[in-house]
Every structure is written in C-alpha cells, then in structure tokens.
Amino acid sequence: MELNERQEQILEIVKESGPITGEQIAEKLSLTRATLRPDLAILTMSGFLDARPRVGYYYTGKTGGQLFNERMKKLTVKEFQSIPVVVNESASVYDAICTMFLEDVGTLFVVNKQAHLVGILSRKDLLRASMGKQDLESVPISIIMTRMPNVTTCKPSDSMLEVANKLINKQIDGLPVVREVEDNGTVNHEVIGRLTKTNVTKAFVYIANDDIHT
Amino acid sequence: MELNERQEQILEIVKESGPITGEQIAEKLSLTRATLRPDLAILTMSGFLDARPRVGYYYTGKTGGQLFNERMKKLTVKEFQSIPVVVNESASVYDAICTMFLEDVGTLFVVNKQAHLVGILSRKDLLRASMGKQDLESVPISIIMTRMPNVTTCKPSDSMLEVANKLINKQIDGLPVVREVEDNGTVNHEVIGRLTKTNVTKAFVYIANDDIHT
Image (tube, rainbow over all chains, first blue to last red; front, side, top):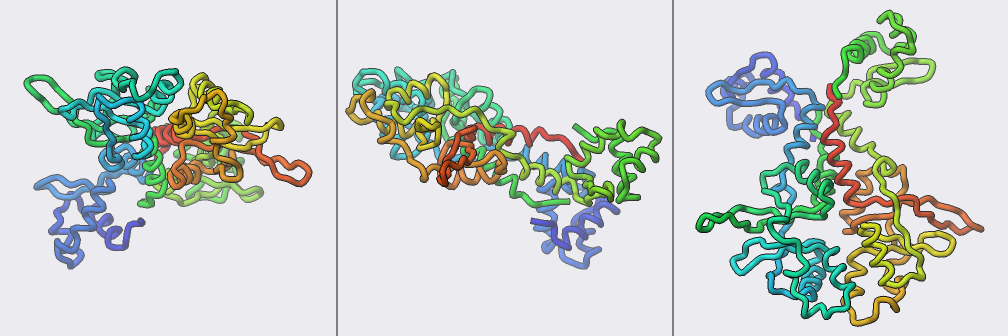
C-alpha cells in the first residue's frame, strides 16, 4: 500500500500548519471530518502523524526507514498467535503423541483440572521418551514434561521481536501465550494462545510485503 | 547504525551534483579518494547511492522505507544458513533419532554413498515411526523418509523471503541448501547447508535491529 493522493495532501498540510485539528484539516480540503477519518487513522497508525487530545495532529518528523523499523518492532503476539493445543496432565505419552499428530502441532501445553498451565511438551521431549523401552501408554506425561515455573511464556501484548529473541536464546520452538489469573493469592496461568517460530516466519513475510513508503 | 556526518555530506553532494565520480566527491570534501571509500561503500550497499562505471555515483531517490524494505527482501539464504546434518540412507530409525539428539537438530538430510541428497527426515517422521510397535533398530530410514524429488530445496542465493514463503506454504520446518552437480547427464544435489524457521527467526531479529535510517 502506498499513500494515496489525499493522504499526501494531509501530510503536507500537517507538516506546514501542525499542530492542527481534524476539523481544520477538513476545512482546508473542503471535505467533512468524517470523510477524512480513515486517512487520518492510516497516517497515525503508520507513524507519519501523531495526535494529542485538545492539541491536534502533528508531524512526527520520522523518516520512512525509522517508521518501517518501528512498525516492525510494534508487531505484537496477539496479531500472529495461533490456537493453543492442550493436554491434561494425566494423559499418557502415547496420548500426547496422538494429540500432536491429530492437531498437527510441534508443542503441547499441559494443564491441570483447573485448566491452569502446569507444563509443556515438545516433539523432542516425546521423541526422547519413545526411544526408551517402556510402554508409552503407561508413562504419564507429567514425568517427561518441562514443568512450571520453568516454562517460558509470553503475553498477547508482547512484541514479536521480544518473543523471537526468547525463542532463539532459549532454543525452543514455541511458547504459550498466557493470561494471569489470581486465585486466593496465588497467580496461575491460563493458556490463551500458541506462539511458535512458524508465527515469527509469518511475521517476517508480512513485514517484507509491507509497502507503506514515504 | 546511523549515517555519520561525512556520509550525510556525501549524500548532499551527490543529490546536488550527481552523477559524480568518487574523485570529484573527494575533491569537494578536500579528502583523498581512499578515505572516502568505506563511506561510499556503505552508502551504496544500503541503497542510498548507486554507481555506474565511467558515469559515477548518483542518488537513487529511494525513501528510507523503500530502502529498508529492499534490504529485507535482499537477505539471502547464505547469510543465515546453518551447518547441515546428514545420515546415510542405510541407517536405522533408531540411529537417526540418536543423530537428531546428538546434533540437536529438527531435520536430517539423507544421502547415498555418493553424498547426494536422496531424502529428508523430520522429528515428526521419526515420532510417527516410533509410535508403531516395530523394533526401531531394524527399520531403515529409507522406508519412512520423504524421498527426492519430493524434497523442497533451496539455493544459497535464494532470498530469505522466498524460503520463508516455502516453509509456510508447504508446512515444513526446514529445508536443505543444495548445490547441483552434474554426473553423466543426471543432475544430483549436494547438501551444503540447512535453512529452518530458526534461521528465519534470526533474520527477523536481525532486520528489526537494523538501524540504518534516512
């Protein structure tokens, strides 16, 4: 997406006369405030303009390179997360492997009866378990999973950059997106999403195809 | 990295007087051509300037946003690829699982005696095999691997964007970086690297931390 002609005009007006209200911009262009709303939203979201209540719009003075970089750093987990797949802590290793195949995921989140996160299982954990000579149906996953509080988690509002760094530094494939829930003074975690290297790869493709230029 | 003062000066000179030779820029700044060489290299590599033999440097007129985007699209496999881990096609599933753990990778490339690529094995393939009731030491990997020509490959000169798209669209974790070798008229593939979602995640972090602005 390139800026359209009207957006370019708005940008010029704000550069010259900012801070300026939406009302005043509309007047200069002989348009209604409502007509301008989508353009102003785009210019603000993409970082060209900033707005302050009771002051109006002003030009951020940021270059295209800076804006692109900022947009990239502002991508958040909630824009890219996937649906989580959970198993109960009482499941067997065999059950977990089946769930992994049925759901076609590389990471399972383990929850207790209260649906709180208690652990995590990767393909690697399950593969290691399957190398032993035990009967996989009789081994509970609670023996082989990585247990809380050793599970790395993230929040929907975290930046993708932050999470990408965690995935690399801790050498993990994915992590649960959680919401903290307080229960009689103890903090528990509810699993509300899944964030993996696949999601980061999608963010990479998304940002490479981002064509807002200035 | 921000542009330094001398680089900004060069940019101004070329904007005004380009196309202009390195010699002429040096003269205007009362510096030697050799002193300017690193600055000119940076300005050219980052896309602000372009150079043509016997013409000189000229300003590309590209905005910071465009340049950032272009730099991102120009990232290549060879800048981010990892060392490949291969197993011989005669290995057993058990051997392959051991190699995967010893080398700590998620994808193994299968080669024949001539060291040519014949197949690929993911953690998922090995996990599926281990669910059966067979003795893993007696099952050869050639039975469970994905076979050439059904293996998606890439070249060192491919762009990371292209490969990221392949990883997502084909739902695979990693692919071999190959070099084609001709042998009596048949084209074979030598494995020279490994490109996974981890490498794309690293590229994402790399580009988010890229601070060349204009």
